[in-house]
Every structure is written in structure tokens, then in C-alpha cells.
Image 1 (tube, one colour):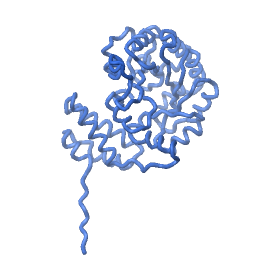
Image 2 (cartoon, rainbow, N blue to C red; image 1 turned 30 degrees about the vertical axis):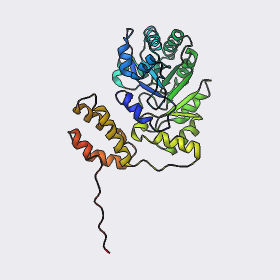
Image 3 (cartoon, helix red, strand yellow; image 1 turned 180 degrees about the vertical axis):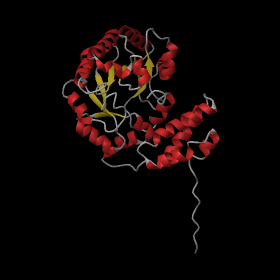
Image 4 (cartoon, one colour; image 1 turned 30 degrees about the horizontal axis):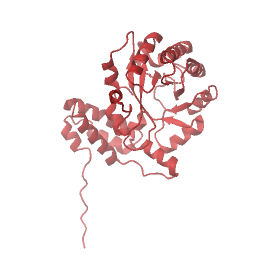
Length: 321
């Protein structure tokens, strides 16, 4: 979720009750202990800890800090720095499928060797010494699923307290389907809680993912951007057994307008225009109406024009007595 889940987006997505916690974009760790400003950039919620406030979104949903890297010692040093800055937990990213990240030995690249996964998790857990939890996210492997279980076991053996599994290999990228049944295989081989992730776009997907994986919890990524009301709809269904109405285009458009107005307080108009279009592109996934709107709006270059055209006012029908 690099480049799309910043603090403002986390704020907007958690204003309606639905999420138990959120995670930052990854902080890229290479060969040095990063200065505090890097952590504050990725996770400005850490500044709350300076005032003895929770590290959370404005609505009170906890924010966990994610690190991505491959060198155990450097990951450990930066995890310790994050702890000193007030981090609630450290999440380790072994799932990113981006070619650039993988070429630089990050994300899913480590899934080729479960021992490397273990070394990274163990180094971070040792450095934190139980003061805050360590969690991790993996895929079902790099090119195949042969070491999916071994990688999950390495995460547990290294000292993680929870594992999120995206139900595809790195080479499968985001091509459907997500193999939720494989997440279930992993769950049967480890004792820490497993969270299912991947292709959960609707209430029906949520139920199928839980059923096939056996997991009690799921993580939403791209789907939370595509439908900002999906998590609240899941939570409402859990609590009442009733379905809330589907998210309309007008509801999506209002989120985009709010997002744009807030981003304009700190970013140039051209950058905000690009960011709004980026989120709009995410919204079209799995929703025909949003895709039609995306095609209508994608060539607009001025922010004012884009926001003005997000919702076309329908002409009232004329009635005759």
C-alpha cells in the first residue's frame, strides 16, 4: 500500500467504526539507523506520544508501524528507534511484490529462504525484548507455494505474535483468485493468530475468506480504498446480522472531495489532482459504476474541474398534472 495509505487516508478510512487497527506504509530500512524525521513522515501519529496521547488516528484507531528490509541488524536498530519514538508495535513486511523492492532484496524477496525470514523476525523481537509486539505479513511464497508453511513457521519461531497472510505468491501479484484455502493450511501449522488477506471486496468475499481459511480476522488493503464503507459494513453485519446498503458513487465522491480539500492544506494542486485520481482508480475495482466515473473523469487536469465533476447533478424530471 505504498503511496496510498498515508496518515490522512488512515484518518478518513477510520472515521466510521470498522477497523480494529491500521498499519503505516512501509519504512524502507537498508543499512543505517534512520533519523526520527523519517518515522514521523511515515507515521505522524507518533508525535501524539510526545503529548502522552495514543498513537492512533483521530477517531482512536491504533496505528502500527511497518518496516521493510532484509538486514537483521539494521531492522533491529530501527525497530528499537521506533520503540523509543513511541511505536505501538512493529510489523515486518515480507509481502511486497513490487519488482523494484524485490530487486533490492526487500519484501517478498525474502520468502525464497525461510531462514532469512526467521533471522529478520528474531533480530527485531530480540531488540524489542517484549516491550511491544512484533507482527509480520507474508505471501504464499515467491515463485511457488512450496515454502509457504516453512516461512510462516519461521515467522512464529522468530518471535512474532501475529501473522497476516496474503493468499497469493509474489509471482501471482494481484491476479485473482486469492487462495484462502492455503491460508488455512498455514494456520494449521502454527499457533499464533493468522489474519487472512487478499481479494476481500464484498461481504460475500469476507465470509468465503473466513470459511476457507478458518481465520477469525481479515485484513483489508486495496478493498478499503475501493470501498471506504466495506469495513463498517462488515462490522455492522457481525454485530447485527443485517446488511447495510451498498456504497453509492455519491458516497465515494464525497470521500474524494474531503480528501482533496484536506490534502490541499499542505500539497500543491497538481499533486492533489494526481492523488485524487490515484484513489479514484482504486475505487473502480469491483464496481462498474465507479469504473464508468473513472473513465469520464480521468483526463481532467485541473483540480477544481475534477472536484466539480465528481458528481453530475441530475436534472429533475418534469411532471405534468
